Length: 224
Ligand SMILES: C[S@@+](CC[C@H](N)C(=O)[O-])C[C@H]1O[C@@H](n2cnc3c(N)ncnc32)[C@H](O)[C@@H]1O
Image: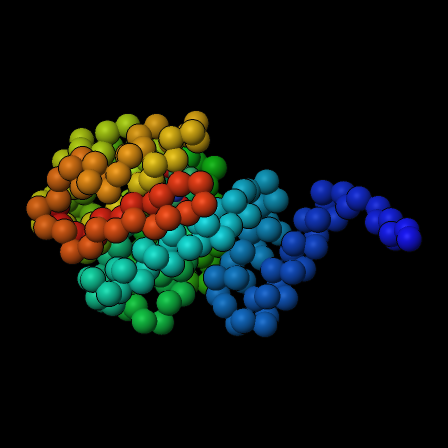
């Protein structure tokens, strides 16, 4: 028995298919976030949005969102996300009707991600802002953030030095992992205990580990 042969799709065909699929999913779900993904596929064809929104990334951020809700509640004035990449977590928070959040700022050192984050979050209007900035060079006092989020702790050289810049009493949500083999991960932790020791939070409302196939993700929610 022979199988029908399929001609290989070119990458531009895949891109067009991806756009059609994302638009269809946006129409079907009515999701502002999924509509944002369709816009990113159309406007920023070189952005790695499929990587940023793969199921592992989404699971880690759903976990963050649920435990934030469970342990710190639904209402925030200003949320600041550091190392925010394409702004997926801000989009997931703004998309979640359980939360009331005035505004989310997504800051990232890479200038290439700013416009993509804006496109992804365009449906949320002026409640979302993307800024290119080094998280070690920010005046955190002037930000007056209700909540500071960093799910990119494995990407920064010194967690303690960075946390030392954020005013004490600030509520934080932090994620890191033990995925040492990934070259861009310059500061992984081997365990939840090591993460807690490095962060040195004055109060911990949540500390947990999420087992993924190739690595474990760790999360702390608490106060500096
Ligand atoms: C690969 S991404 C995010 C991975 C993470 N698991 C997540 O989605 O939350 C890490 C981001 O951290 C950013 N980053 C690294 N060092 C930074 C710094 N000093 N200030 C701001 N952003 C930084 C990078 O540019 C990148 O966009």
